[in-house]
Image (tube, rainbow, N blue to C red; front, side, top):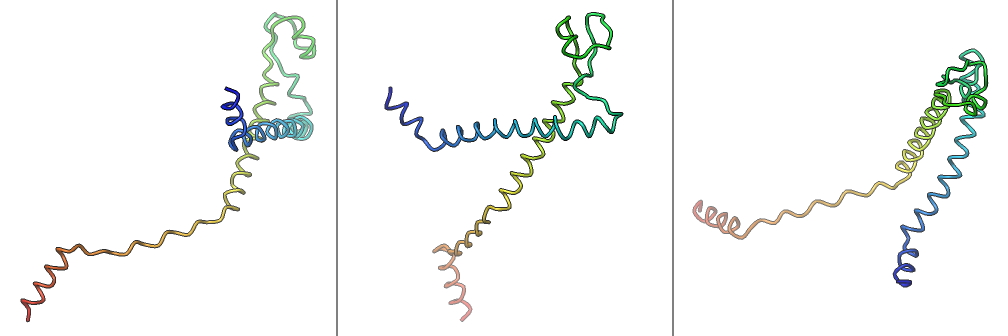
Amino acid sequence: MMQEFKAFASKGNVVDLAVGVIIGGAFGKIVDSLVGDVVMPIIGRIFGGLDFSNYYLPLNGQGTTLTLIEVKKAGGVLAYGSFITVAVNFLILAFIIFQMVRLFNKMKKAEPAPAPAPVVTPEDVLLLREIRDSLKK
């Protein structure tokens, strides 16, 4: 069992996957910071200087004058501002990944098209052509 596990863990695909997950986690933190610290303040400024993370609807009847953290402590809340932030985060991440895949596809060397296979005429066709040519003479 240990040998099977060693063979599984040492395969290139498993190592590549592990590296991808680690880099993806770090990349996710970068995108979270980009969205939370750069993009969302700009979007909030465009929409009147409001912070989306504090947009919510209380489900327990309390007013909306409290911050989201205070309302969550008091009871249920529908935090649609957090959802907007996560949705924008996803869109930015998807766009960046799309651009990366596009860049890698451009960097790939185009494989040359295989040479067309030579046309091989079957024996019976050659024989019929010989007969036809003989009859013409």
